[in-house]
Length: 156
Image (cartoon, rainbow, N blue to C red):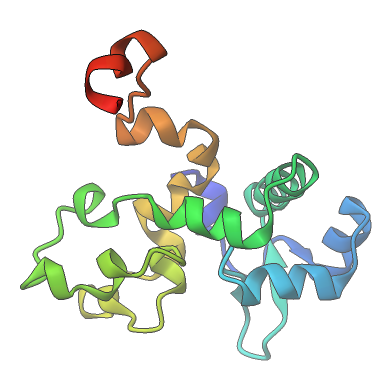
């Protein structure tokens, strides 16, 4: 995880600066946060601060949207990251884990706050840091697509 993700909340750019830099509205950034695509860093007064790494992620979100992947699609891609494997989860009865059964939101957007017991903040988590690798999700999940030749015997 980069040092910039662990920076003091008072360091970084305010939301208006980020919005102007990206050419989007503040409301759009708020919507991305509300939709679970990222977690903002806030001070005690609720002012959002963004690291350079946060801005890179917002740019990646914009690229995916321009490529035709909607917000729900991005959220679904992020939900495929196997947090329980990455973190070596010891959650009792993984079949009942809200993160495993929720295929629509990444673990950090899950309202059950399942990792709260570990006292780890989602922004500091290795799983959240991997959001930047969503483009390489296929390799991370070891998904292998069959060619037409490989598929003939079993896919008919």
